[in-house]
Image (cartoon, rainbow, N blue to C red; front, side, top):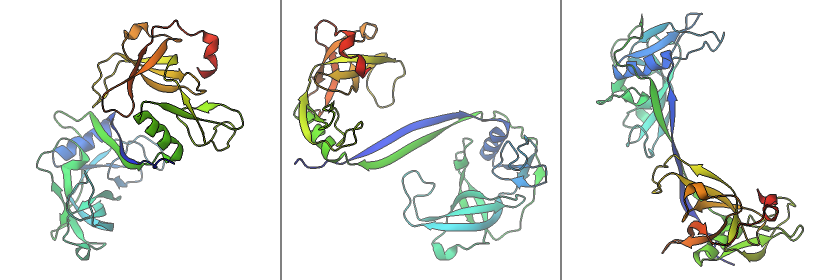
Length: 313
């Protein structure tokens, strides 16, 4: 039985969104060292501001400037900061009700230890030196012993307003493929492709899953398939992916390997993108040192008849 593999994986993408007038004013205000909230119909000031009243669902635009000082309403100590968190030393996550606001803002408090933090303590904003119009323009909160501030109406007008933000989303985790896929990956390292056959329906699944998705029974009979196969369907990629050194446009396809009953996906190379077609016969191209095919290229065989792969489209 092969060793079960594991590897660190990262799923990462930038989330881009446009801003409405309230959020635009809020983030632009942070850039200008101004904290804005919004007043609801019943007179409550919400910070951070929202564009619709959470009680009545009515649109709200009545902006209010609140103080950069406030009171901790609850907190939790973080002894081990993670990558990209606001501070690289231990800190407290805090909910702070700013003076003039009726709701609390989630941020971090720079404190020497948990014994220095308590509910009801007074704090103030520590502004970031370089501000761009993001919540990180508040570098953190820090203890404060001065007087409480107030609130005042604000028109929300600033020069060069922030109209959009890009928020990076990232998930780091360790993936263990399990027995079936570990065997599949070990075979790929030897430039072989193996699947597993269902003992009930006799279909061969590549990559193997350890169980038949149709019958729900365990699979353990290994079957070598391919390496050649047939393009069942495909798409043309026109947007270049970050950290992927492939020029666009290129083709990504589902490929039914000979002897398999499930199509896998891979990039098609060695042929102009506009000549890729359903039924095209292809074979893997291995790069030196890689554990898996770099791409698939045409074999030069006649195209497969549609009836030969229509069940896998």
